[in-house]
Amino acid sequence: MEILGIGINELIFILIIVLLVLGPKDMQKTSKTIGRWLRDITRSDGWKMFQQTSQEIRSLPTKLIRDANQELNEIGKEIKSASPSTSSRIANPKQTRQPQPYSDKPVTQPENKISPAENELKESESEQPDNA
Image 1 (cartoon, helix red, strand yellow):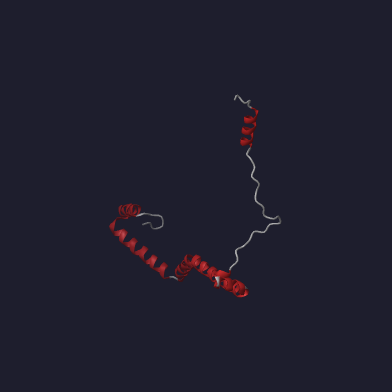
Image 2 (cartoon, helix red, strand yellow):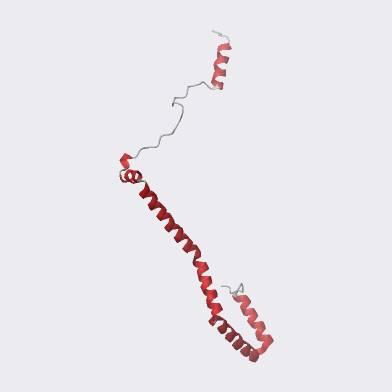
């Protein structure tokens, strides 16, 4: 746990130094003074405004996401209401058409070609003399 970037070990070390420097009597007076000062700060209007602003900043991402989702839902409803054919296709999935790729050329099967390696093998076999 850290308070203003100061861990528990550092805080204990600071308190020991303050006790040695001020002594027990002066430390008591200083602690009361610091306590009153902190109480006045936390009860002030500025501190309340600071706390309120801090809370709003922490909740801002959640609020922005909620607003964005609301807008997306509204846009989705507008799209669904604008295109009734889409909603009928969704209701009857058997009627849905599969998208077909668009092509200017007619679809043909590729020709079977002999690879260059096979071609060379056939040529080398035909060039060899028959020893039979």
